[in-house]
Length: 111
Length: 422
Image (cartoon, rainbow over all chains, first blue to last red; front, side, top):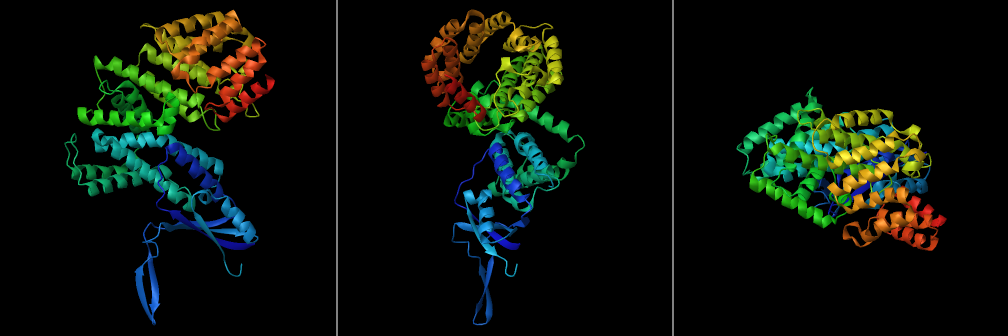
Protein backbone atom coordinates (compact mmCIF):
# COMPACT_ATOMS: atom_id res chain seq x y z
CA UNK A 1 0.00 0.00 0.00
CA UNK A 2 1.12 3.53 -0.78
CA UNK A 3 0.38 6.66 1.18
CA UNK A 4 -1.16 9.78 -0.28
CA UNK A 5 -1.55 13.30 0.99
CA UNK A 6 -4.89 14.93 0.25
CA UNK A 7 -4.75 18.72 0.35
CA UNK A 8 -8.19 20.28 0.75
CA UNK A 9 -8.85 23.82 -0.47
CA UNK A 10 -11.91 25.85 0.55
CA UNK A 11 -13.59 28.47 -1.56
CA UNK A 12 -13.81 31.25 1.01
CA UNK A 13 -16.25 33.30 -1.08
CA UNK A 14 -18.84 30.55 -0.88
CA UNK A 15 -21.49 31.52 1.65
CA UNK A 16 -22.32 28.88 4.24
CA UNK A 17 -25.63 29.29 5.97
CA UNK A 18 -26.71 25.87 7.17
CA UNK A 19 -29.43 24.73 9.54
CA UNK A 20 -28.34 22.54 12.48
CA UNK A 21 -29.88 19.62 10.61
CA UNK A 22 -27.83 20.32 7.47
CA UNK A 23 -24.68 20.76 9.53
CA UNK A 24 -25.50 17.51 11.24
CA UNK A 25 -25.84 15.66 7.95
CA UNK A 26 -22.69 17.19 6.47
CA UNK A 27 -20.63 16.40 9.53
CA UNK A 28 -21.93 12.85 9.68
CA UNK A 29 -20.83 12.26 6.09
CA UNK A 30 -17.36 13.62 6.87
CA UNK A 31 -17.09 11.53 10.02
CA UNK A 32 -18.11 8.37 8.19
CA UNK A 33 -15.30 9.03 5.70
CA UNK A 34 -12.77 9.81 8.40
CA UNK A 35 -13.65 6.63 10.29
CA UNK A 36 -12.78 4.46 7.27
CA UNK A 37 -9.61 2.40 7.84
CA UNK A 38 -7.84 4.01 4.86
CA UNK A 39 -7.64 7.37 6.70
CA UNK A 40 -4.38 7.51 8.65
CA UNK A 41 -4.42 11.11 9.82
CA UNK A 42 -6.04 14.47 9.29
CA UNK A 43 -5.52 18.02 10.52
CA UNK A 44 -7.30 21.28 9.97
CA UNK A 45 -5.12 24.34 9.33
CA UNK A 46 -5.64 27.73 10.99
CA UNK A 47 -7.62 30.21 8.95
CA UNK A 48 -4.86 32.75 8.38
CA UNK A 49 -2.79 33.39 5.27
CA UNK A 50 0.31 31.69 6.68
CA UNK A 51 3.89 32.73 5.93
CA UNK A 52 6.15 31.96 3.00
CA UNK A 53 9.93 32.00 3.26
CA UNK A 54 11.80 32.45 0.00
CA UNK A 55 15.48 32.69 -0.67
CA UNK A 56 16.44 36.07 -1.99
CA UNK A 57 19.97 35.52 -3.34
CA UNK A 58 20.80 33.23 -0.45
CA UNK A 59 19.01 35.32 2.19
CA UNK A 60 15.71 33.91 3.53
CA UNK A 61 12.91 36.47 3.13
CA UNK A 62 9.56 36.00 4.87
CA UNK A 63 6.26 37.23 3.53
CA UNK A 64 2.55 36.55 3.99
CA UNK A 65 1.33 33.29 2.51
CA UNK A 66 -0.02 32.81 -0.98
CA UNK A 67 -3.64 33.03 0.11
CA UNK A 68 -4.09 36.71 0.86
CA UNK A 69 -5.11 37.44 -2.75
CA UNK A 70 -6.79 34.17 -3.69
CA UNK A 71 -10.25 32.89 -2.96
CA UNK A 72 -9.11 29.29 -2.49
CA UNK A 73 -7.39 28.60 0.81
CA UNK A 74 -5.65 25.42 1.94
CA UNK A 75 -7.95 24.37 4.78
CA UNK A 76 -6.57 21.02 5.90
CA UNK A 77 -5.07 17.71 4.91
CA UNK A 78 -5.57 13.98 5.22
CA UNK A 79 -3.05 11.17 4.98
CA UNK A 80 -4.62 8.10 3.41
CA UNK A 81 -3.54 4.66 2.28
CA UNK A 82 -4.31 3.40 -1.24
CA UNK A 83 -2.92 0.90 -3.75
CA UNK A 84 -2.23 3.53 -6.41
CA UNK A 85 -3.22 6.95 -7.71
CA UNK A 86 -6.43 5.63 -9.26
CA UNK A 87 -7.63 4.27 -5.96
CA UNK A 88 -6.47 7.34 -4.03
CA UNK A 89 -8.44 9.58 -6.38
CA UNK A 90 -11.51 7.36 -6.07
CA UNK A 91 -11.33 7.57 -2.28
CA UNK A 92 -10.76 11.33 -2.36
CA UNK A 93 -13.84 11.80 -4.54
CA UNK A 94 -15.96 10.09 -1.88
CA UNK A 95 -14.95 12.77 0.64
CA UNK A 96 -17.86 15.27 0.97
CA UNK A 97 -15.40 18.09 0.32
CA UNK A 98 -15.16 17.01 -3.33
CA UNK A 99 -18.69 18.31 -3.83
CA UNK A 100 -17.88 21.92 -3.07
CA UNK A 101 -14.09 22.41 -2.86
CA UNK A 102 -10.80 21.42 -4.44
CA UNK A 103 -8.74 18.38 -3.42
CA UNK A 104 -5.13 17.91 -4.47
CA UNK A 105 -3.81 14.32 -4.31
CA UNK A 106 -0.05 13.71 -3.93
CA UNK A 107 1.72 10.43 -3.36
CA UNK A 108 4.23 10.25 -0.50
CA UNK A 109 7.54 9.37 -2.15
CA UNK A 110 8.80 5.84 -1.58
CA UNK A 111 5.57 4.44 -0.17
CA UNK B 1 -14.58 8.09 17.95
CA UNK B 2 -14.30 4.35 17.47
CA UNK B 3 -17.75 3.58 16.15
CA UNK B 4 -19.45 5.55 13.34
CA UNK B 5 -22.94 4.73 14.66
CA UNK B 6 -21.94 6.08 18.06
CA UNK B 7 -20.67 9.24 16.42
CA UNK B 8 -24.05 9.62 14.73
CA UNK B 9 -25.92 9.45 18.02
CA UNK B 10 -23.58 11.88 19.69
CA UNK B 11 -23.84 14.37 16.83
CA UNK B 12 -27.60 14.02 16.66
CA UNK B 13 -27.74 15.08 20.25
CA UNK B 14 -25.30 17.93 19.73
CA UNK B 15 -26.49 19.58 16.58
CA UNK B 16 -30.21 19.03 16.66
CA UNK B 17 -31.02 19.42 20.31
CA UNK B 18 -28.08 21.37 21.55
CA UNK B 19 -28.55 24.32 19.21
CA UNK B 20 -31.76 25.43 20.90
CA UNK B 21 -30.42 24.91 24.39
CA UNK B 22 -27.27 26.88 23.63
CA UNK B 23 -29.23 29.73 22.07
CA UNK B 24 -31.52 29.89 25.12
CA UNK B 25 -28.58 29.85 27.49
CA UNK B 26 -26.65 32.56 25.62
CA UNK B 27 -29.75 34.72 25.23
CA UNK B 28 -30.07 34.78 28.99
CA UNK B 29 -26.49 35.97 29.34
CA UNK B 30 -26.65 38.46 26.45
CA UNK B 31 -30.19 39.72 27.06
CA UNK B 32 -33.26 39.03 24.87
CA UNK B 33 -32.55 42.07 22.67
CA UNK B 34 -29.46 40.21 21.49
CA UNK B 35 -31.20 37.02 20.46
CA UNK B 36 -29.70 37.45 16.98
CA UNK B 37 -26.22 37.55 18.44
CA UNK B 38 -26.90 34.41 20.49
CA UNK B 39 -28.05 32.61 17.36
CA UNK B 40 -25.06 33.81 15.37
CA UNK B 41 -22.57 32.66 17.97
CA UNK B 42 -24.17 29.22 18.20
CA UNK B 43 -24.13 29.03 14.41
CA UNK B 44 -20.48 30.07 14.53
CA UNK B 45 -19.60 27.38 17.08
CA UNK B 46 -21.27 24.71 15.00
CA UNK B 47 -19.65 25.96 11.82
CA UNK B 48 -16.26 25.70 13.52
CA UNK B 49 -17.06 22.16 14.58
CA UNK B 50 -18.02 21.46 10.99
CA UNK B 51 -14.68 22.83 9.79
CA UNK B 52 -12.54 21.17 12.44
CA UNK B 53 -14.00 17.80 13.38
CA UNK B 54 -13.89 16.30 9.87
CA UNK B 55 -10.08 16.47 10.07
CA UNK B 56 -9.40 15.94 13.74
CA UNK B 57 -12.35 13.80 14.78
CA UNK B 58 -15.07 14.56 17.33
CA UNK B 59 -13.46 15.75 20.59
CA UNK B 60 -13.99 13.65 23.68
CA UNK B 61 -16.15 16.28 25.34
CA UNK B 62 -17.89 17.59 22.26
CA UNK B 63 -20.63 19.39 24.17
CA UNK B 64 -18.14 21.27 26.32
CA UNK B 65 -16.17 22.11 23.17
CA UNK B 66 -19.24 23.68 21.54
CA UNK B 67 -20.15 25.64 24.68
CA UNK B 68 -16.63 27.00 25.05
CA UNK B 69 -16.39 28.04 21.39
CA UNK B 70 -19.86 29.63 21.46
CA UNK B 71 -19.08 31.62 24.61
CA UNK B 72 -15.78 32.78 23.19
CA UNK B 73 -17.43 33.76 19.91
CA UNK B 74 -19.95 35.83 21.90
CA UNK B 75 -17.15 37.52 23.84
CA UNK B 76 -15.31 38.34 20.60
CA UNK B 77 -18.49 39.72 19.04
CA UNK B 78 -19.15 41.96 22.06
CA UNK B 79 -15.61 43.32 21.99
CA UNK B 80 -15.80 43.92 18.24
CA UNK B 81 -19.13 45.65 18.25
CA UNK B 82 -18.60 48.23 20.95
CA UNK B 83 -21.68 46.69 22.34
CA UNK B 84 -24.64 48.62 23.62
CA UNK B 85 -27.76 46.75 24.64
CA UNK B 86 -30.91 48.83 24.98
CA UNK B 87 -32.56 46.40 27.39
CA UNK B 88 -29.59 45.11 29.35
CA UNK B 89 -28.66 47.07 32.41
CA UNK B 90 -25.24 45.51 32.58
CA UNK B 91 -22.34 47.13 30.82
CA UNK B 92 -20.63 45.03 28.16
CA UNK B 93 -17.74 44.41 30.57
CA UNK B 94 -20.09 42.72 33.02
CA UNK B 95 -21.64 40.65 30.24
CA UNK B 96 -18.20 39.64 28.97
CA UNK B 97 -17.16 38.64 32.48
CA UNK B 98 -20.36 36.61 32.92
CA UNK B 99 -19.74 34.89 29.57
CA UNK B 100 -16.16 34.09 30.52
CA UNK B 101 -17.29 32.66 33.87
CA UNK B 102 -20.01 30.59 32.19
CA UNK B 103 -17.59 29.30 29.54
CA UNK B 104 -15.43 27.85 32.31
CA UNK B 105 -18.14 26.49 34.56
CA UNK B 106 -21.16 25.58 32.40
CA UNK B 107 -20.01 22.23 31.00
CA UNK B 108 -19.11 20.97 34.48
CA UNK B 109 -22.26 22.03 36.31
CA UNK B 110 -23.76 19.00 38.05
CA UNK B 111 -27.27 20.38 37.38
CA UNK B 112 -26.49 21.24 33.75
CA UNK B 113 -29.46 19.33 32.31
CA UNK B 114 -31.89 20.95 34.70
CA UNK B 115 -30.38 24.35 34.14
CA UNK B 116 -30.59 24.13 30.34
CA UNK B 117 -34.13 22.77 30.50
CA UNK B 118 -35.17 25.72 32.58
CA UNK B 119 -33.50 28.13 30.14
CA UNK B 120 -35.37 26.47 27.30
CA UNK B 121 -38.74 26.78 28.99
CA UNK B 122 -38.15 30.44 29.73
CA UNK B 123 -37.20 30.93 26.11
CA UNK B 124 -40.36 29.23 24.83
CA UNK B 125 -42.51 31.33 27.11
CA UNK B 126 -40.81 34.51 25.92
CA UNK B 127 -41.19 33.51 22.27
CA UNK B 128 -44.91 32.95 22.89
CA UNK B 129 -45.48 36.37 24.43
CA UNK B 130 -48.85 37.91 23.39
CA UNK B 131 -47.00 40.95 22.00
CA UNK B 132 -45.59 38.71 19.27
CA UNK B 133 -48.01 37.62 16.51
CA UNK B 134 -48.87 33.96 16.99
CA UNK B 135 -47.46 32.70 13.68
CA UNK B 136 -44.22 34.60 14.29
CA UNK B 137 -44.03 33.28 17.85
CA UNK B 138 -44.35 29.71 16.67
CA UNK B 139 -41.67 30.17 14.00
CA UNK B 140 -39.34 31.82 16.49
CA UNK B 141 -39.77 29.06 19.06
CA UNK B 142 -39.05 26.40 16.49
CA UNK B 143 -35.95 28.23 15.38
CA UNK B 144 -34.48 29.18 18.75
CA UNK B 145 -35.63 26.32 20.98
CA UNK B 146 -36.15 23.53 18.47
CA UNK B 147 -32.98 24.25 16.52
CA UNK B 148 -34.93 24.24 13.25
CA UNK B 149 -33.67 25.72 10.03
CA UNK B 150 -35.85 28.27 8.25
CA UNK B 151 -36.49 25.76 5.44
CA UNK B 152 -37.69 23.16 7.93
CA UNK B 153 -40.04 25.61 9.61
CA UNK B 154 -41.42 26.48 6.18
CA UNK B 155 -42.20 22.80 5.64
CA UNK B 156 -43.86 22.44 9.03
CA UNK B 157 -46.14 25.36 8.16
CA UNK B 158 -46.65 24.60 4.46
CA UNK B 159 -45.30 28.13 3.90
CA UNK B 160 -42.60 29.80 1.82
CA UNK B 161 -39.14 30.27 3.34
CA UNK B 162 -39.23 34.02 2.70
CA UNK B 163 -42.49 34.28 4.63
CA UNK B 164 -40.97 32.46 7.60
CA UNK B 165 -37.85 34.62 7.52
CA UNK B 166 -40.11 37.65 7.58
CA UNK B 167 -41.99 36.30 10.59
CA UNK B 168 -38.73 35.78 12.45
CA UNK B 169 -37.64 39.34 11.77
CA UNK B 170 -40.98 40.64 13.06
CA UNK B 171 -40.81 38.51 16.20
CA UNK B 172 -37.31 39.66 17.08
CA UNK B 173 -38.27 43.28 16.48
CA UNK B 174 -41.13 42.84 18.97
CA UNK B 175 -38.76 41.38 21.54
CA UNK B 176 -36.43 44.37 21.17
CA UNK B 177 -39.10 47.08 20.92
CA UNK B 178 -41.22 45.78 23.78
CA UNK B 179 -38.25 44.92 25.96
CA UNK B 180 -39.52 41.38 26.55
CA UNK B 181 -37.75 39.40 29.25
CA UNK B 182 -37.10 35.76 30.03
CA UNK B 183 -39.15 36.01 33.24
CA UNK B 184 -41.84 33.38 33.58
CA UNK B 185 -45.44 34.66 33.14
CA UNK B 186 -47.73 34.56 36.15
CA UNK B 187 -51.37 35.10 37.08
CA UNK B 188 -53.76 36.00 34.29
CA UNK B 189 -51.02 36.06 31.63
CA UNK B 190 -50.25 32.42 32.12
CA UNK B 191 -53.19 30.62 30.37
CA UNK B 192 -52.77 32.45 27.03
CA UNK B 193 -49.02 31.97 27.06
CA UNK B 194 -49.49 28.32 27.91
CA UNK B 195 -51.84 27.84 24.92
CA UNK B 196 -49.25 29.29 22.59
CA UNK B 197 -46.53 27.15 24.13
CA UNK B 198 -48.62 23.99 23.67
CA UNK B 199 -49.21 24.89 20.02
CA UNK B 200 -45.47 25.24 19.51
CA UNK B 201 -44.77 21.90 21.15
CA UNK B 202 -47.38 20.17 19.01
CA UNK B 203 -45.91 21.70 15.85
CA UNK B 204 -42.48 20.45 16.81
CA UNK B 205 -44.00 17.02 17.34
CA UNK B 206 -45.76 17.08 13.99
CA UNK B 207 -42.65 18.15 12.16
CA UNK B 208 -40.93 15.09 13.59
CA UNK B 209 -43.85 12.75 13.12
CA UNK B 210 -44.77 13.57 9.54
CA UNK B 211 -41.44 14.88 8.12
CA UNK B 212 -42.57 15.91 4.65
CA UNK B 213 -39.19 15.61 3.01
CA UNK B 214 -35.97 13.65 3.14
CA UNK B 215 -35.14 10.01 3.66
CA UNK B 216 -35.95 9.63 7.33
CA UNK B 217 -39.71 9.45 7.62
CA UNK B 218 -39.78 9.74 11.37
CA UNK B 219 -37.41 12.01 13.14
CA UNK B 220 -37.53 10.46 16.55
CA UNK B 221 -35.48 13.26 18.01
CA UNK B 222 -38.14 15.86 17.26
CA UNK B 223 -40.98 13.74 18.59
CA UNK B 224 -38.87 12.96 21.63
CA UNK B 225 -38.05 16.63 22.11
CA UNK B 226 -41.71 17.67 21.87
CA UNK B 227 -42.66 14.92 24.31
CA UNK B 228 -39.88 15.97 26.65
CA UNK B 229 -41.02 19.61 26.65
CA UNK B 230 -44.65 18.56 27.07
CA UNK B 231 -43.83 16.30 30.00
CA UNK B 232 -41.66 18.99 31.50
CA UNK B 233 -44.69 21.29 31.69
CA UNK B 234 -47.03 18.45 32.67
CA UNK B 235 -44.76 17.66 35.62
CA UNK B 236 -44.40 21.30 36.65
CA UNK B 237 -46.64 23.73 38.48
CA UNK B 238 -47.83 24.97 35.07
CA UNK B 239 -49.70 21.74 34.34
CA UNK B 240 -53.35 21.96 33.20
CA UNK B 241 -55.77 19.38 31.74
CA UNK B 242 -54.96 20.43 28.17
CA UNK B 243 -51.25 19.95 28.86
CA UNK B 244 -51.92 16.34 29.84
CA UNK B 245 -54.16 15.93 26.77
CA UNK B 246 -51.36 17.11 24.50
CA UNK B 247 -48.82 14.81 26.11
CA UNK B 248 -51.31 11.91 25.82
CA UNK B 249 -51.88 12.69 22.16
CA UNK B 250 -48.16 12.86 21.38
CA UNK B 251 -47.34 9.71 23.36
CA UNK B 252 -50.11 7.67 21.71
CA UNK B 253 -49.07 8.81 18.23
CA UNK B 254 -45.35 8.36 18.85
CA UNK B 255 -46.08 4.84 20.15
CA UNK B 256 -47.00 3.84 16.60
CA UNK B 257 -43.69 5.02 15.13
CA UNK B 258 -41.95 1.61 15.16
CA UNK B 259 -44.82 0.11 13.15
CA UNK B 260 -45.12 2.87 10.56
CA UNK B 261 -42.14 1.53 8.60
CA UNK B 262 -41.74 -2.18 7.83
CA UNK B 263 -38.49 -4.16 7.69
CA UNK B 264 -37.94 -3.05 4.07
CA UNK B 265 -38.24 0.62 5.01
CA UNK B 266 -41.68 0.93 3.45
CA UNK B 267 -44.59 2.95 4.81
CA UNK B 268 -47.38 1.00 6.51
CA UNK B 269 -50.80 2.64 6.86
CA UNK B 270 -52.37 2.69 10.33
CA UNK B 271 -54.92 -0.06 9.72
CA UNK B 272 -52.29 -2.49 8.44
CA UNK B 273 -49.72 -1.85 11.16
CA UNK B 274 -48.39 -4.70 13.30
CA UNK B 275 -49.73 -3.53 16.63
CA UNK B 276 -47.30 -5.73 18.56
CA UNK B 277 -44.62 -3.29 17.42
CA UNK B 278 -46.27 -0.31 19.06
CA UNK B 279 -44.26 1.08 21.95
CA UNK B 280 -46.08 -0.11 25.07
CA UNK B 281 -44.31 2.33 27.39
CA UNK B 282 -45.59 5.24 25.33
CA UNK B 283 -49.09 3.73 25.15
CA UNK B 284 -49.06 3.47 28.96
CA UNK B 285 -47.81 7.04 29.28
CA UNK B 286 -50.50 8.16 26.82
CA UNK B 287 -53.36 6.55 28.72
CA UNK B 288 -52.01 7.77 32.06
CA UNK B 289 -51.86 11.35 30.75
CA UNK B 290 -55.25 10.95 29.07
CA UNK B 291 -56.76 10.01 32.44
CA UNK B 292 -55.31 13.13 33.98
CA UNK B 293 -56.50 15.29 31.08
CA UNK B 294 -60.18 14.57 31.76
CA UNK B 295 -59.98 15.80 35.34
CA UNK B 296 -61.83 19.10 34.92
CA UNK B 297 -61.34 22.04 32.60
CA UNK B 298 -62.83 22.84 29.19
CA UNK B 299 -62.22 20.25 26.44
CA UNK B 300 -59.53 21.40 24.02
CA UNK B 301 -58.47 20.40 20.50
CA UNK B 302 -55.85 18.26 22.23
CA UNK B 303 -58.57 16.37 24.13
CA UNK B 304 -60.37 15.53 20.87
CA UNK B 305 -57.16 14.44 19.16
CA UNK B 306 -55.99 12.45 22.17
CA UNK B 307 -59.38 10.71 22.25
CA UNK B 308 -58.97 9.81 18.55
CA UNK B 309 -55.48 8.43 19.19
CA UNK B 310 -56.79 6.53 22.26
CA UNK B 311 -59.59 5.00 20.17
CA UNK B 312 -57.00 3.72 17.70
CA UNK B 313 -54.82 2.44 20.55
CA UNK B 314 -57.73 0.56 22.14
CA UNK B 315 -58.54 -1.39 18.95
CA UNK B 316 -57.14 -4.93 19.12
CA UNK B 317 -56.58 -5.01 15.35
CA UNK B 318 -56.99 -2.80 12.29
CA UNK B 319 -60.43 -4.37 11.72
CA UNK B 320 -61.62 -3.46 15.23
CA UNK B 321 -61.21 0.31 14.94
CA UNK B 322 -64.34 2.10 16.13
CA UNK B 323 -64.76 4.43 13.14
CA UNK B 324 -68.14 5.76 14.32
CA UNK B 325 -66.47 7.01 17.49
CA UNK B 326 -63.58 8.44 15.51
CA UNK B 327 -65.91 10.26 13.12
CA UNK B 328 -67.83 11.81 15.99
CA UNK B 329 -64.55 12.92 17.61
CA UNK B 330 -63.47 14.47 14.31
CA UNK B 331 -66.79 16.33 14.20
CA UNK B 332 -65.94 17.76 17.64
CA UNK B 333 -62.44 18.60 16.53
CA UNK B 334 -63.57 20.29 13.32
CA UNK B 335 -66.02 22.40 15.31
CA UNK B 336 -63.18 23.60 17.56
CA UNK B 337 -60.57 23.86 14.80
CA UNK B 338 -62.07 24.26 11.31
CA UNK B 339 -58.77 23.69 9.48
CA UNK B 340 -58.55 22.02 6.06
CA UNK B 341 -56.04 19.46 7.38
CA UNK B 342 -58.53 18.37 10.07
CA UNK B 343 -61.28 18.23 7.43
CA UNK B 344 -59.03 16.04 5.28
CA UNK B 345 -58.41 13.61 8.14
CA UNK B 346 -62.11 13.61 9.00
CA UNK B 347 -62.83 12.55 5.40
CA UNK B 348 -60.94 9.30 6.06
CA UNK B 349 -63.36 8.52 8.90
CA UNK B 350 -66.33 9.56 6.71
CA UNK B 351 -65.19 7.09 4.05
CA UNK B 352 -64.91 4.30 6.64
CA UNK B 353 -68.36 4.92 8.09
CA UNK B 354 -70.37 6.04 5.05
CA UNK B 355 -68.34 4.61 2.18
CA UNK B 356 -65.76 5.98 -0.28
CA UNK B 357 -68.25 8.08 -2.26
CA UNK B 358 -69.16 10.03 0.90
CA UNK B 359 -65.46 10.41 1.70
CA UNK B 360 -64.86 11.77 -1.79
CA UNK B 361 -67.72 14.24 -1.38
CA UNK B 362 -66.25 15.36 1.96
CA UNK B 363 -62.95 16.43 0.36
CA UNK B 364 -64.48 18.00 -2.78
CA UNK B 365 -64.50 21.55 -1.38
CA UNK B 366 -60.94 21.14 -0.05
CA UNK B 367 -59.57 20.79 -3.58
CA UNK B 368 -59.71 24.55 -4.13
CA UNK B 369 -58.42 25.47 -0.65
CA UNK B 370 -55.17 27.39 -1.16
CA UNK B 371 -53.86 26.22 2.23
CA UNK B 372 -53.71 22.65 0.96
CA UNK B 373 -51.99 23.51 -2.31
CA UNK B 374 -48.95 21.27 -2.68
CA UNK B 375 -50.03 19.02 0.22
CA UNK B 376 -49.64 15.46 -1.07
CA UNK B 377 -52.19 13.86 1.26
CA UNK B 378 -55.14 15.49 -0.49
CA UNK B 379 -54.56 13.96 -3.97
CA UNK B 380 -53.27 10.77 -2.30
CA UNK B 381 -56.52 10.33 -0.37
CA UNK B 382 -58.63 11.17 -3.46
CA UNK B 383 -56.70 8.56 -5.41
CA UNK B 384 -57.24 6.00 -2.67
CA UNK B 385 -61.00 6.63 -2.57
CA UNK B 386 -61.31 6.63 -6.38
CA UNK B 387 -59.52 3.30 -6.43
CA UNK B 388 -62.06 1.91 -3.95
CA UNK B 389 -64.79 3.22 -6.27
CA UNK B 390 -63.17 1.32 -9.15
CA UNK B 391 -62.16 4.45 -11.06
CA UNK B 392 -58.47 3.56 -11.65
CA UNK B 393 -57.88 6.10 -14.43
CA UNK B 394 -58.80 9.08 -12.28
CA UNK B 395 -57.02 7.52 -9.28
CA UNK B 396 -53.78 7.26 -11.27
CA UNK B 397 -54.03 10.96 -12.10
CA UNK B 398 -54.36 11.74 -8.39
CA UNK B 399 -51.32 9.67 -7.43
CA UNK B 400 -49.32 11.38 -10.17
CA UNK B 401 -50.44 14.76 -8.77
CA UNK B 402 -49.45 13.63 -5.26
CA UNK B 403 -45.98 12.68 -6.52
CA UNK B 404 -45.54 16.26 -7.74
CA UNK B 405 -45.85 17.46 -4.12
CA UNK B 406 -43.17 17.55 -1.46
CA UNK B 407 -43.00 14.32 0.50
CA UNK B 408 -40.48 11.93 2.03
CA UNK B 409 -38.83 9.08 0.13
CA UNK B 410 -40.93 6.33 1.81
CA UNK B 411 -44.06 8.37 1.07
CA UNK B 412 -42.93 8.72 -2.54
CA UNK B 413 -42.39 4.97 -2.89
CA UNK B 414 -45.76 4.34 -1.28
CA UNK B 415 -47.42 6.65 -3.81
CA UNK B 416 -45.59 4.93 -6.70
CA UNK B 417 -46.87 1.56 -5.50
CA UNK B 418 -50.39 2.97 -5.39
CA UNK B 419 -49.92 4.40 -8.87
CA UNK B 420 -48.83 1.01 -10.20
CA UNK B 421 -51.86 -0.70 -8.67
CA UNK B 422 -54.18 1.88 -10.26
